[in-house]
Image 1 (cartoon, one colour):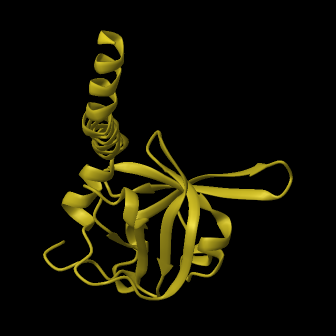
Image 2: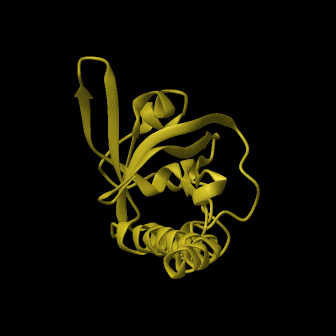
Length: 164
């Protein structure tokens, strides 16, 4: 009889502490990936000042620094640059970014399993971090044909307000 009462007491408290621990740990992990992967450093310079617009590429995989984002990145390609965001459920601490084309430098292109093409670009000068994204995102941009490692042409660059 005593064991039955203890079991009922544990069952009554179960919904209160398990979800709190689970969600707390999940939020902790998301914030750690945000800071360690380089998103926080990019957000200091490239935080978007407007809602993303342009050609959307939603629910894509990619990497920011060493942090992988499997099927949870949203890209929007414009003539001026690239909006990069995280899907809503993981957006905590990860603001949408707007990166002008002239602040990107191609580091390498990779092919995985003969059909999955990715491009890794360095962000900023000096480099803040890297972003690896599907090549088809950049194929729809004016950037891919203008890609170069040397200094960007300022006529081609639309920098965010307050950025030299």
